[in-house]
Image (cartoon, rainbow, N blue to C red; front, side, top):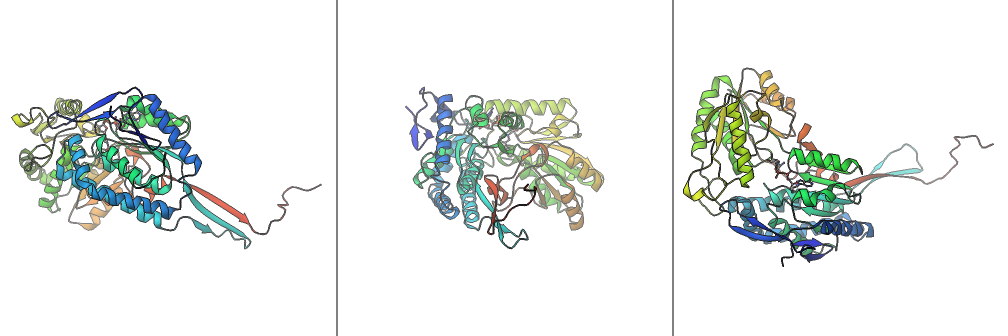
Length: 491
Ligand code: TXE
């Protein structure tokens, strides 16, 4: 029987023995069989996390000691890069080399939080009374449910696990049911590094089955979630009952604005990458191209020419530039999204269908797609496809570019290309999105905050705030010369 749940320091099978088969999006081959938790297992994991937190077994460690643990985890992850990258590319279908880059980013994330934890925490406040000392101290927030998606499975979990460990929280990790293997590998490393029993727990299974308690149980203090908007809304509703803290990253439909005075060649190349990297399965993908009318034809013709040549393939295809979609259900959604765009009046310039190459027959391969003549109110402009689909709109003025870029309920990221630094800075400032790239698109660093305005989420990951999400802030006022308050008359 497979035993891939990690609860209270022990590897366990599901209490009813249930298991789940993970299949490659590349060819549907069986890549793993993992335990599928029951409700009883979930309650056990929450109980273990709560008990470990309340016992002080980890909260009593200094920030420095917890940072050293996180640093050790970074070393072990680095040691196991290729093994973990293999699991990640098996589950997601992404190229092995991309999975290796992802693990390198995971290691950097752990190193960033280790360094942040080692810094001084808390501060003194001058309250203007000589005999009063006032201190702001940071304390671990409590028990956290850490729920991850399938597009960057280990990385998105790492953005949560590393700060939770530095902060001294106890937690339950739940990766996407489609991509569980890298989370299992991470949990083995967390165990090997010497994390106290019960602090780190792993639950596997579909959110609809194992998620409910993770987001509503009164013993959970914080839910940190990355995934779809609808699930995010479910979590907000469930968390209301016990006023849980929330950290939500819910994706976006990200504007990518190109002015006529930009370095057009660089802008085009970055626009192709922004939209089609990882087949568009990126929350910050630049899939909403907004281009100045005078350069529309030149830019769009070149993007279409490039998109048609993108080479698709599985984890070990050395000629491949990107891979399959995660599942058949997702492929069907992307396909329906494109058809709806066409029905609403968009012009399909390239792609718009599943790859018909024989070597892709068993995989969920969808061709890079460009929809031109799009208008702001169209479904394909407003909604995220999470697939390789670029929509194109035109603008005539700076004000119009900004208005289009902000005409969305989302606010995760955006890009602006211009040779006029002052104009680019004005547009970057006016766009209401959490990350803006000027004359670039896509790079991020663990030291810089990441997160969304508006319906793209609540809170921030990475940077310094990314640790703050897992901390409570306490003010301790100490009067070193106690005296009567004298407020009420003592009759
Ligand atoms: O996400 P879900 P899905 C977007 C993208 C995509 C859409 C749906 O647009 O097409 O979301 O993807 C768990 N209680 N993003 O359906 O369902 C689930 O098991 C607790 C953006 O895959 O939100 C998984 O672990 N947990 C994104 C995680 O939530 C629940 C990345 C995400 O799944 C739950 C992925 C519940 N009731 C998709 N229901 C990004 N921001 O990067 C589900 N889950």
